[in-house]
Length: 147
Length: 407
Image (cartoon, rainbow over all chains, first blue to last red; front, side, top):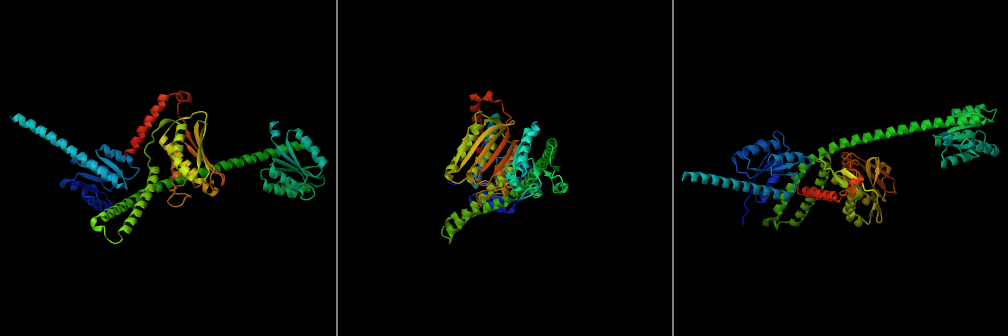
C-alpha cells in the first residue's frame, strides 16, 4: 500500500535546521517546504496546501505563538506541532490551548516526531471528514427542501 | 558556684608541696584543677586537656615559666596565663604581661586574691572565645551567601548556554539522521566505507544524546514546572528509593540499608522531586563506596522539619571539594559518567521545597548528607491508620506517573 505523503511546512529561524530537517522528512517520503519566519509561514499557507505546520516557538519578530494564533484564525483546520526549548513548557501549554496539536522539545526525538506527525495528519483528516459529512447533510437538507 | 566549677585550671610549679597544697585549696572552690611540675609537662598536659586558665611559676628548672608562657600563648590562644613570681622578681612579672600573660602575682599568694584573678582571667578568655565564635559564624554565613549568589548566577548562565547549545544540537541530530536515511537506500548499500560511515554516524548520534541529556538537566533546573504537592509517608518514599537504586547497588557490590524510624513521618511535599533528590544522593553514596560498602538512609524529626539522612561508608569528600560539590558541572567522575549536575539540581529542588541540604564528610570516613524539608503535614495519629487515604495517594501517584509518561 502506498503511503500518502504528508504536506509539511517547517518554520524556524535557524536556516540550517530547516534545511536538514526538511531533507530528512523528504527522505521519509513527506512533501516539505521550509521557511524562516512567521510571516513567510502565513504567506505560504495562503497559497499552498499544507497538512501540518512544524513551528518553532522562539523566533525573532512574529514568534511561534503569534503565528499559531494567526494560522488558527485564518485556517483552523491546519494542524500545528510546536517546537519548544525545554523549560518553556508553559508556552507549549498556552499553544495547545490555542489549538496546537502537540509540542516537542528541541532537539526532538525523530521517532516521536513521526508519531506526532501521523497523529496530526489523522486528526486533520478526521476533521475534514466531519466537515464533508456536515456539508453533505446540509446539502441534502437543502435539496430535500427543494423537492 | 557553677561558674567556678566550669573553670579548668592548670597549676604549674616545681615545688610539689606548695603546688599540691594550692591545688587542694583551689579544688575546694570547685575548680577543675590539674597539675604539672615543669613547663614541658604543662605543654604536654594542655595538649591532652585544654585549660581555661594556667597558673604558673616563673622560676622552674628546664623550660622556665616565661618560655612556657610564650609557647602556650602561641599554641593555645584561648588559654589565659597567670604567672607566680618570686618576691624580688617584679620584672619577670612585667615581662610576662608584655608577652601575653593575663597578670602576675607575687609569692606567697593569698588564696582569695588568686581566686579572683583566676575568675577574671576566665571571664576574659570566655569573652574572647565568644567573639571568635561570633566572627566565625558571621564568616560562615557570608561564605554561604556568596556561594548561593555564585550558584544563582552560574545557574542563569548555564541555562542560557544550554538553550544556545540545543539549536546546533538539533541541526547535528537532523543532519546525522538524514545521512543515516541515505545510507539505508539501496543505491548506497555497496558504496565504499559504508559500514564505517554508519558506525561514525552512530557515534555522532550517541554524543548528541549525551549532550542533550546535559542540556535537559540544566534546563530542568532553570525552568521546572510547578511542583505537585501531596501528602506522603516518608517511609514509603525511602523504600521506593531503595527499590529504585537496588540494581545499581548490587552491581557495585554495595548494600543500601534503611534505618528504622519508630514514628512514621507524614509529609506534605512534592514526592517526585524529593524522590529524585534522594535517588541522586543514594546513588552518589553507592558510587563513593568500594565493593562491600554500605549506604544508610533514614529519617527523623527535628524542629518541625523532616530530616532524611543518606550516609555512606565511601571515600569521603576532600576538604577542598566541599565548597564546590553543589556547583554545576563539578564532578569527580570520569568524563561521560557524571554530568556534575546531580547535587546542583538537588539543592535547587530542596530549596524550592523550602528545605536545605547539609553535608558532613571526612576523607576515608564516608559522607553524610542531611536533607531537611518542612513537614506541613497533618498530625501523625490522624493519618497513620487511615488506609483509604493511603490507597487514594497511590492511585493519585499512578495517575501522575501515567500523565508524566504521556508527554
